[in-house]
Image 1 (cartoon, one colour):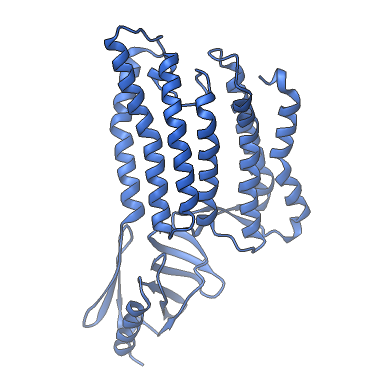
Image 2 (spheres, rainbow, N blue to C red):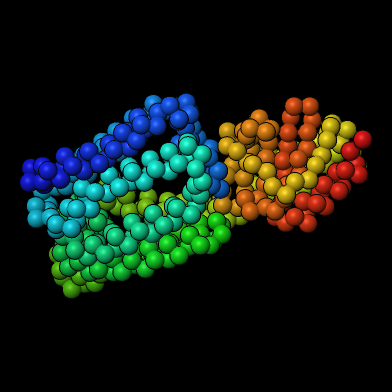
Length: 361
């Protein structure tokens, strides 16, 4: 494939590395540490040196780009690749390199960027694009819905990919629309779309395989039978458990504040419980909003943001909050700061009033 598309291989590689040029142009304006990762709550929780983000990220995308091209080239199962599928292979990594780098540079240059608005749109566009061309793929081992039953039979491959293509297109539309929804609902749509897109074609392909077996239609051997059974059992057990775990972690969890005679307790799902004496608190204030900053450690999901954070005002501080909480309570003890934010402004004002009444003036 590369031999017959040398021009595309060179051009797509150059495009993959274009973010380096942008990074060099704005080198002096970029911070020494750039945000490299966002948590499930949309809060930045990972940084990397400027040099790695400017040079390393595009080079990683370039390496993956060439692995994809080599995979298609070395796949002897399919020597006649559909031209549009070849185009996907050539331009998937370059587009991702530019999109990811654009997000990194936007944040580094302090431009407004909402990862949970952009992410569903990007993933949805990918689903739409891939869903449109899945039915056009021919049987191979490097791209498509690669199962024992699809790779072993042309009819199974074609029918499974026609169904999968329709599901991916519908899922892509749903993901793009979900960008308009609150974070927790958008994540729920994303999990549902990914689960349906993976499970339904697999079940359909297996049922078609059993139907063919009953009709005496033979399939080409693909893998060793013993290892195939082991992999099947592992997938059958692990995939549902992983999906259940992800759904639970993403959409459940609570933050609560309980008041006692001498202290109050802050509890949050998946995080450490805090017990704080009233006489240890120097001050308490209510705010309509606060700049969360960046998480250094802790838990983040579309529902909760907890752990140790860093921002310009508080420095290093502790946050226990709902991601869509209205208002917050800021407590100070010397240089230590704790920020609590429940779901509604009324709940947060009630906490502030109770703490104000109990904390010695």
